[in-house]
Amino acid sequence: MAAWSSRKLLRDVLLKSVVSNQLPGIRCFSSAPKIAPKIGHYSKKGRLLTGATIGLLIAGGAYVSTVDEATFCGWLFSATKLVNPFFALLDPEFAHNLGVSAAARGWVPREKRPDPSILGLEVWGRKFSNPVGLAAGFDKNAEAVDGLLALGFGFVEVGSVTPVPQDGNPKPRIFRLQKEGAVINRCGFNSEGIVVVAKRLGAQHGKRKLDETSSASASSNNEVKHGGKAGPGILGVNLGKNKTSEDAASDYVQGVHTLSQYADYLVINVSSPNTPGLRMLQGRKQLKDLVKKVQAACDEMQWGEEGPPPLLVKIAPDLSKEDLEDIAAVALTLHLDGLIISNTTISRPDPASKNPLASETGGLSGKPLFNLSTNILKEMYILTRGRIPLIGCGGISSGEDAYKKIRAGATLVQLYTAFAYGGPALIPQIKAELASCLERDGFKSIVDAVGADCR
Image (tube, rainbow, N blue to C red; front, side, top):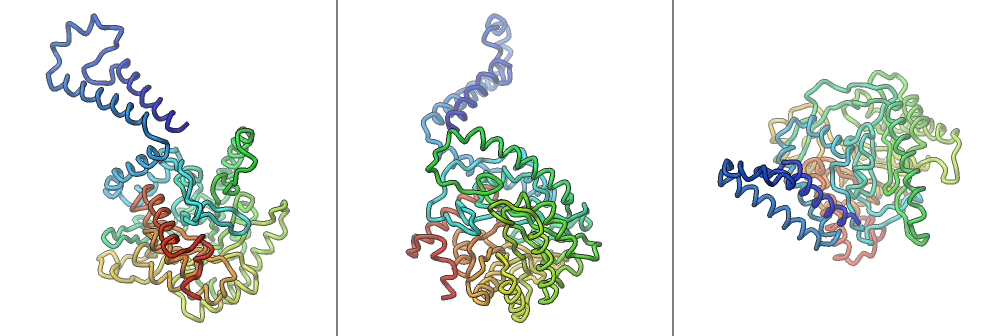
């Protein structure tokens, strides 16, 4: 159906272009007598350009009509590579906002091809079509959830969302280390606040329900459906605290009360390096008290059969062995539903340390973070004895990287910086490479490979 629509669109564009004089040197077909006196005024180059344009459109339309939907979808994703150099010329934050706006308006390709079956899995009672997600920080204000899920992510995490709107730190606050495939940011939880985000998610949720109702009769009852409250994919909501707040627990509780009804899982972010004092909440006593209060807030709300959304904590990569042991103990004692490992680092792992921008204050993400975050991931998997789902985040830029995270203990993985550099074409590439890695090593599913390097 999509391929037919694309072919129809191409035909319509050709006809409208010709009829409305949008192609150089061509007038409306119905005005043929008016063309003859003027035709001599057109240069030979103009006539050649016109003929070539029409020929290319006709040939392209004819060729598109012969390809299947999967091939056409692949072309669209590959075509986004042509745009990446343009984004690299823009200010990093402006480019980021432009990317979010494009996804929000549907100006990105939609993945129509099914994910390899080997990538499907179930976590927290939710069915994921694949384990590759988008980390928090990209869509901070839940502006582009549908567009981002349509790119083929198995799940998307929005936020961090703070109770009260705040601008974050002064600009410039995002710096590209392009050669190293890294980014340093000190955004500081710039957020439109929980009220705006709740209204946005509520509107999206209502529209999605209407769409599901209208299309219910067309779907097969035997069809395996992936996804959650965000429709075809899983939606996570990452909660943060305001910079000036003196009661962190109260901030996170407000986030739970306002946003949890729209989330397939919630994240307590206590690991951003750009909010003063935030990482102190990773201490054993502080974390235990905080999680208890947030869990109590979830329990006091009314829930349907599914119950409250799973609760996760996102931790830093800059932790000592003792810190990790304390976090693992809290997670096991309080029955946390998961941990995200990890946030950005305040260190500057090689080769980023040699970049002149390495002296900029903020958290570093991207390729140089991979080894550090993966080692922390593996350590936490061992400390929690594989009893808690872990999301591996930090430096993933290929399917092989995602596979290494999974073997180190991750049930799910997240991208951010590599997506900012590679664009939409990176998503199907990573999924295909990950499926190949699993098949190469004889695994029949993602679950079978989780923690393989820790056994």
